[in-house]
Image 1 (spheres, rainbow, N blue to C red):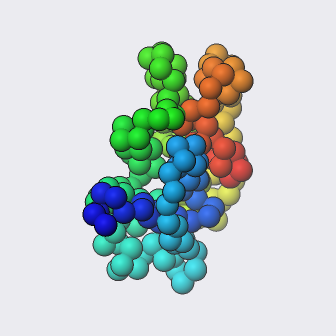
Image 2 (image 1 turned 90 degrees about the horizontal axis):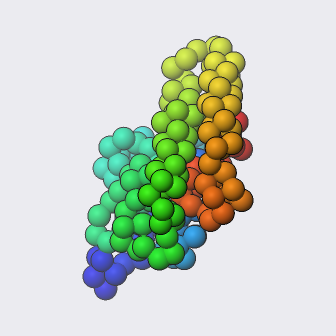
Length: 174
């Protein structure tokens, strides 16, 4: 079996919103994959092992081995899946709606998600939960205002798109 035809391997943590995004995209596209759990808490964090660091020098999940390459960062993975496996599409055809989906996803991965990251929270000190809740709540309030202008049945219109994978699990971490 060639590297291109091999089944994708997803390195993931069950509570990681970034990993959830990729699992949702894989499911929506009907892509079968093997899952390798990476516990971010056990043994001081399995992502810090030499083996995982060789896979992803950022020492973060998710990482996806696919088509002979290894990708990290959830949106980069989702964009690759969309470009190489366009059906079913995770993005609307309309360029304005497509831009809105990307805006919502970026709002979450850049403006909300980093504030709940274990590595970030460890650096903040004893008021970390108060600090995180304040900024995450502020991010979700801004997102709710955006959604008032974009939402239909889903975040943007009436079709499910990649932005929904960003919102679904982050909302659990709120």
